[in-house]
Image (cartoon, rainbow, N blue to C red; front, side, top):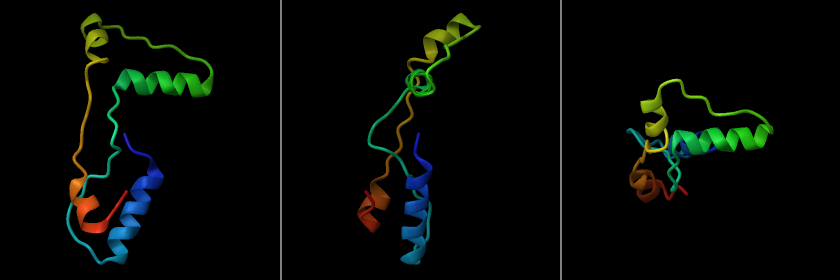
Length: 79
């Protein structure tokens, strides 16, 4: 997951430098779908997690997506 403002900052940085290529824009932290859902519930102040399929319920806490953003950090000093 990544914040829209981070994507915008990275895009502007690359355009200003006349860069080309494909870059991963990602946070240093990894989150599961379940942890993001819980954050949303906390921010909104209400809600619940519902999974109809029991096997999906076990999986939602395991899935973590990691992107390597070293290229944009190295090439453009993106933080």
